[in-house]
Image (cartoon, rainbow, N blue to C red):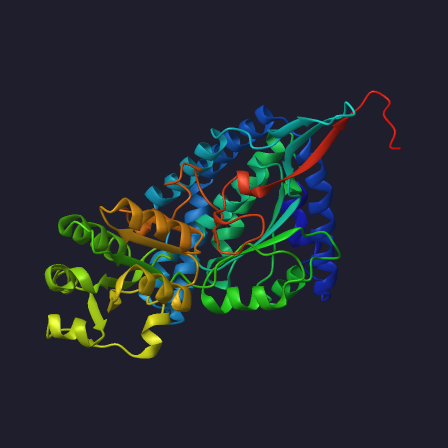
Length: 432
């Protein structure tokens, strides 16, 4: 199993470029094989991988315990340690997620369009794999299985680079996945993990490994994503910040607004789909503002507001100009009163991150304008921003959220990990 031998093959190598070039070449060769794999073969492989993860639970949990101990010794935050920690239930969830990806419809080979030209040519647009996907992630070991399984389902090869904190856990999960691939007759190199903590390996991946990497997906904090977006020589699927807004419009039902706002902010404060700014239309502020602000404060959320919001509740602290562009990832929200829909859209355009934004209103015309004019990857009407998730979209899982405008946008699931090509069928036509 080449992926399992990778560590020993390069254990004494001083030349990181040689290591990374070898990974890239093997990934490219594996991608060619994966592109031809049948839907049944891929699904059997994913079920087998899930079984191998379950069978390897003792080893994976042992390696994870070493990662957690090292993180604690290094004084890492409790939030990072929680993201890093695996137990029997979380590991079972990882295996179950791999199986669910296997049960999704095959995204490869779909006919996306078909049309006939006046000269008799029949042209089809067909979904095909992207090729080699590089995934660079930090402390969540489950990303190893999620990313590898999503890439496999879409007929791609994956090169995974885990953060230092989760390195041992990721290596153990990747070994189980490699064993599942081999047992299913697919290339073990279709899922490779970079076997070094050397940060220079990230730089090598961002160069594209001499044309062997087709796209990069970063999963991590702002510093990682900024570096990837600044240095990558290949396309990137990513978002930098999740500065998500909830706009309570003049036509909002107060009870619905309260419920949706609290879920958008407080269900999980540390995810990219969590609301970070509340906007309230001045036309309904007299009835809606104080109850909404009070609900947030009573739920344990600090509120930083403009003058109107501070007047609604003495517990509100002043908002600075930086607050409107801050992704807190914590129980903190900025809030302001705006003069109608135009002002709300303008605020989101100037301060948002094109991730996910919501309007709460019973006015269909207001909702239609908001959904059309707010230039974000996901816009919601009378629904929580925390639905910004591939699983909630029915994609099974996601490799990340993309806010760019090329190719993938929003949750990146198996369909977004494909591209397309044209098949042209003729009967001897030549071009005059």
